[in-house]
Length: 153
Image (cartoon, rainbow, N blue to C red):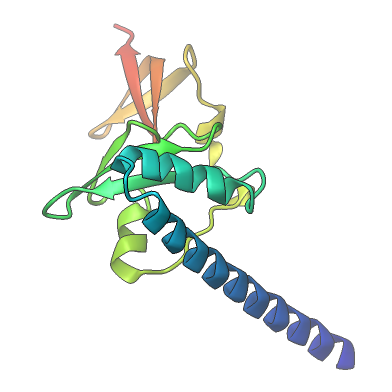
């Protein structure tokens, strides 16, 4: 029992440390934004990614700008390995809107990724259209489980 309590206390402590670290980074990035006030919005976003990547080694990061009306987000800056830069999401696509709406932190771990990572250009797949399956070939991966496909006749 003592071991379990010790593990629980350690997890709580680590969680509190991560929250403190995030708060410190947030304060620092806000100060940096004031320092960068003469830059364009896109340059600020790129600088923010550069600053944050030094603290979150190996993480895929991207910054999106919420359109007027709140129904679209266009991602204007991204870390090197991310494929989000230049993409626009509509409300209901991805997790970004739920993060914005709830103001919660969201961390996607490698174990959360589904099998779509194995789909690539040239993959042969069965596509559901209504209740019918069609054999197809993936022409392009657009991210967020969206693909350009060519139906086989």
